[in-house]
Length: 182
Length: 182
Image (cartoon, rainbow over all chains, first blue to last red):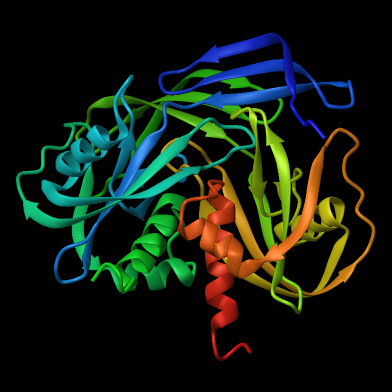
């Protein structure tokens, strides 16, 4: 069966600084009409940067939607037309000062596919070199290195909550454990 | 250092069918002012329902923001004031007809904490009984059982992309492997 929902007309559109929100009237597979609200997001990148000692770079950052500081992997939004691989190198360098000689794609995730176009590309970075961080002057975050095994345990035990960090930590752990890599 | 961002005033608010989007002027830790856009989402629930043979219930559903069918764990939005545990039992029954005698909390995730309040509660359900599905008449989805080990492999290999499904499959796999449970 074809489950395609066909757009009939756009009834609302709201442009904000980061996202646009649209409402479309759509035709459902049974011929009925319904409304589909979509949050259009530029997408982003996220990186598990792991050093030779098995430590991963994490940032602690205030997240206004939840009113608290969260522990996350370094990440950021894609700039318009930016290649995800360029973006992740830029974000890692800006937030932590780290550069990496070895990069592995860990796939992409849709963070909320029922309503949002946000697509997030995940990477594993290794063979790290420490350079100078140069965060946005209005971006405040603490960077630290912690054992990847500890971040993985926190993800499994539900002690960290940022979805990209949970996925990135778990995927990085699985990947680095693979006998064909080491 | 205190990284709290203090709201000064709301400059925009847009109410849609599912989400409200607000823009606040906030005071940053360095005293500068900035804008914080927030997508207010009701939150949701997601469940890995695993039978005695190690098969997990998955749904294939058209996702309008991406214009394609995605493979996902059963999930749904919280109704206003609804308890997450009531919601997850309701969603599992509606979408798949399954009921479960054993429930385990797998924690919650923030799917996009830089911009969205969406909080998603994850569960593992087992000791399943098959009842009658009763999907929303305007909701079209195919339900199937597949080996959890296969869903896990697809998550690790980047063949599935829905974030809650990746997290749920990986956490369920870790949890069911734990020697203290079996």
